[in-house]
Length: 79
Image (tube, rainbow, N blue to C red):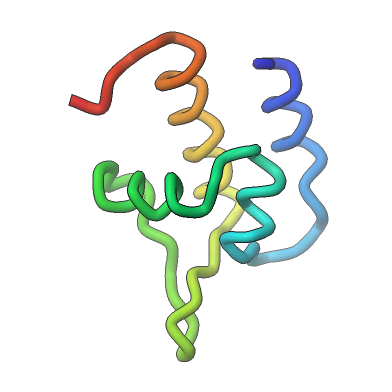
């Protein structure tokens, strides 16, 4: 699974911003989980468009991949 996550992050399309749906598909994390993680991790604060939609950068996608690895693979807890 770790290889798959690294591969997904390395093969991101060449675009500046990603929607939460795109990030969810790339990282295999549900959108509601990503929204929850935003409230728990200060490193994950995506900018918002005028319409209120989140716009994730490559750096934030990498943070999501790292959080997923720590929580799911290494069994760390948020606390």
